[in-house]
Length: 385
Length: 137
Image 1 (cartoon, each protein chain N blue to C red):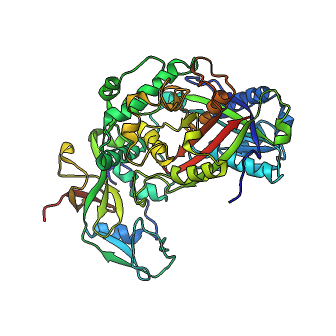
Image 2: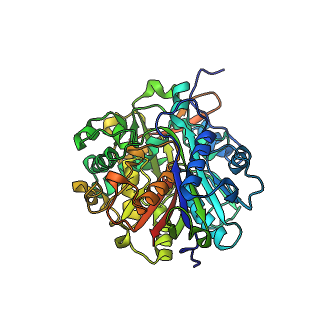
Image 3: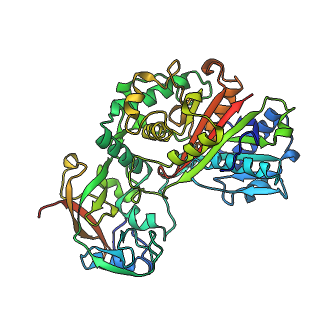
């Protein structure tokens, strides 16, 4: 298998304004985050020769036009849901390693919250001839309900409880309480989660991610260029991407086993590392169950043992395994496709920039994005010198 | 005209025999004539062996609940009056799974592995949705 280890580095990261930010279009969040990420790296716009986006209509076409980054040498609008940006890091690293380009912009922006406040609740839409529109939507399926069925099945197969899922939400809120940019910072208890309104059984309101505005940008460059920039390079040590289905996993052999198994194995093998080597874990937390499935399929615990693994606040500040240290999509921000925020938080942790929530001496971080309805997974392992 | 406001399947040629079947109150699946596997959703090519040698077969409509949820929010405005409503993945005896609703059953009585059987809901003159109730026979 080919390797991407240390073939590229993340040298700039930035958030756009996140939370409730009315009146801005997604591309404006992208422009803001891009400018900040270039400043973070000590690079300028003209250094960018590769564009990556998921979420904009037209993807990198609109991105290049709006930012007047014309004639990029590499362009990639891979859209596999919230894990798209982990795929973009993998693709950018491969392209840089092959000499096709040297500096890539990966970015995302969304006005998810403000859009929702402007009009009637957004309806789930699918192309009129998609399998989902024929065989799922007539029965009232929607995103949370689909994840809820995975949670229900996990509870049935392994005895996982709502209290165990709630541990994850409580732990993330503790991380968020130490993140000045987090939207939800007040402490919550397991009882608070269990007593919050049922959204789609067995998932309660506090098992579900926020809906916010916001955006982010990540700059990836070659080892040569990464050497003498403003911030120390954060190396790509391993990357894997995989997927199992599109919307509802009716054809998966087991609803509780997701593509993180494949993407994680690829990434760990490439990096020559195991779960024991990971100091910080940034997992996609669209729902508490999403985190549980990733912990299992990435190998932090055995399949079925995720519930007992997260007990006792193991993933909270001061716990054995720091998970989703920004507060995640559950408590920090979730503007639709969260994957880019995993990368930004991981890089800032590895650089020691995270203030009160800094994980001491973090040297290796794992980011895992999950997209669609537990459909896709992208794993990126990052490390500092 | 119909006052049915929920999303309706957009039927195309590849899937028409399925919807023609439900309209006759018959659940039909494709069975590959080469590898012998049933498949769902309908596809002109067998996704297992890439054969086009396919026959539509009427099936029992019996199965069990693989997983389910009771949704307290509606996916679209037309579902608002149904809240809380069930959504389930049904595993048919033929091995394939499909998504539907559980009917003729209280939400609190639904459980994984519960035996169910198909019933047909004629939602418009053109479209009949397959739904499932606790098995009686």
